[in-house]
Length: 545
Image (cartoon, rainbow, N blue to C red; front, top):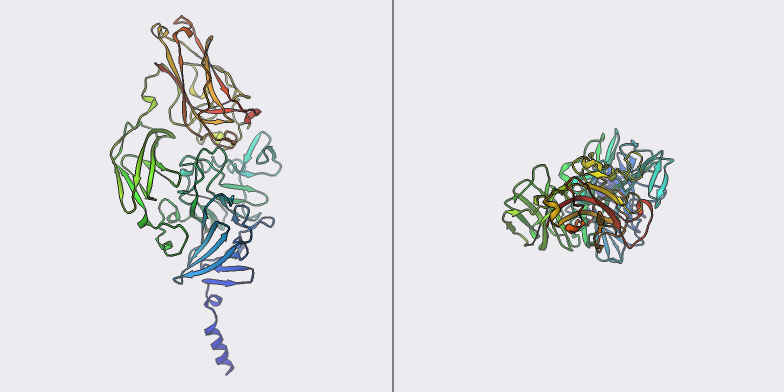
């Protein structure tokens, strides 16, 4: 009789107790076992992941802080539901914000969503906080890992020691622009822990944006997926459903499963999970183009869509296509490198593919130049301190002693190499840079135009010029971000070309004499040092009027 009673108890007990897959309630947390060596606890109070154990090792927690939306949500409504026996969804409601954590049978993953309806909840990222002493670093490679003894040198989040600098902002050496990486992570001999980024359709910044995505130090490292990063930002804050971002584990430090990458993942199994504002593939459209004309050899071309609700992009090597687009009207932009060479308007319809005929790129490089410094590509690539790959100022502070002095010698057209011209110019550091050039007798008889390409203007910084005794009228700021940029590893703002017509009367009337161009940064704002008004240079040239 006692045997039958025990047997009956075993048969009637919840399967989650004896099978690996499922969830229990420990009173404070929902405890989810994925049947993939991953067990996660989620707070029933605020939706934090309070424990993340993979193969018995804890990968959550630093100084009392959990893995969570931003710095954590307050008291929330937290519920749990099972779908079709193989998916568990935890739902967190905090004010107008909805946050979801999804688990799938046999997957060592946490699928993370955040639906920010409005700005009443001021969060913009998900942070996975990993305990100390699990992962080590290489100070030269991990430029976003702050070594002990490196004191703060700017705003408390940029650190330096012995002339070298590190910051949580400096992802440029390993990861780069949003379109360049699918994931960030840390590995050791036992494990790989990765944050696989979402498709960023509701994020901000576009394909070339550089963002805080990882941070390390002796207190333990963080992994982020950031949807709106304010540094150097010129894009709108897009509201709505972000995700999934995927917290993913592998054994023995192996690379992540590429089938989870946003650019190729099939999320059809999520269609029935009642995730607010989720749009299945059937509710999306696509655009396809037959090709691009006037492409230049050696440059990457990117086709991008954006409006205030969503953003998408893809590389174009000839024919091109962008799938999975929310219905709506978008600005279509073609970039040569990071420079806009075409814009138009397109409309995407659910369940259909919009066809686009051949697009002819309009390239400022096509205009014959009297002289040109740099290449029109929307970046300072090739200039002083930007003449290596990856470009050093994307992963170190401009004061870093591994960089050449920004106050370079005067530039002589036809003699000085492109790498002798500063990629950044600040009002307080290397202003009033001089360029020497000669003109032919025919050129001395006519006006000319100087085109000055700027990719970012910090603190309202913008260029003006003078030639010999003539000075151009000061131009208004065309509009850039109003936060730090050049010191946090990004030159990406808005691309603008400032044009200055130089009258024939400005020239020294001698074909053998040098004309002297002075380039100055101006601004109505004030700051000092590397935070003073500054610009990032795309190219500078002189063309016929």
